[in-house]
Amino acid sequence: MTINFDQVEVGTELPAQSFPVTRATLVQYAGASGDFNPIHWNEKFAVEVGLPDVIAHGMFTMAEAIRVVTDWVGDPGAVVDYGVRFTRPVPVPNDGTGTVIEVTGKVAALLDDRRVRVDLLVKNGENKVLNMSRAVVQLG
Image (cartoon, rainbow, N blue to C red; front, side, top):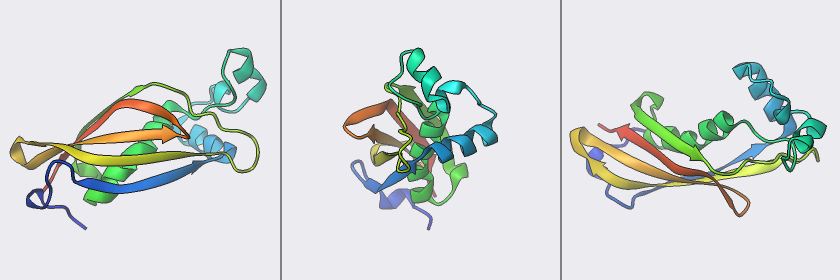
């Protein structure tokens, strides 16, 4: 599906998505990214450095969030700018269930050259984990 600039307006909501995260997910991401920091896999170490538990990689959380945009637009290459501020970690308990990252998005601005700005709300439970999560998307 390709989204046309003429089909959207400020306030257009993107389909919300939920992304489950388990300890196995973190191990897979560590292998793919090369980020083997023990805060992402060693509970004892994470707690010793003041974290509530093992936490998801920030870049993993950021990557999951942008999927709402890429799935909506139908082309990952249409994202021309993306940025976030990390506000809270995503703790991942070792209970076989893990946790969930919830992402919603909406078109916040219509820009020049058939581009839109999409603002994302990224939460883990009641906590907003990314702030100022925004993407600029080139539409047809």
